[in-house]
Length: 76
Image (cartoon, rainbow, N blue to C red; front, top):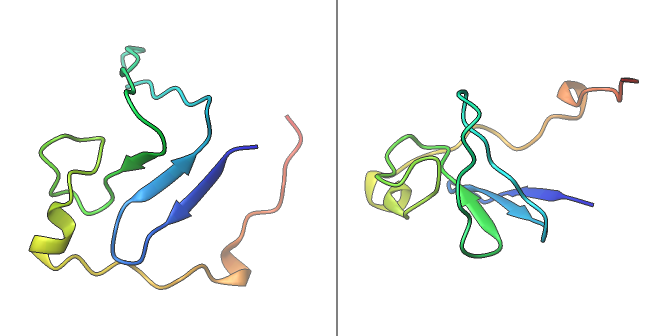
């Protein structure tokens, strides 16, 4: 199972041994360490990965997950 944690005022952290990140052109990023932290503040100089600049920029994340906003599983 893949777990994605939202750090308070920080990155999305993907906790899984098998993660592949692919850009819109189909090019895969090389991932050197686990867990993988993805930027959600927009300030990182190593996008899509987090470099910690959110703390220097004072990034304030949106509210915590709202139960009504959780999507229902769909069949593919």
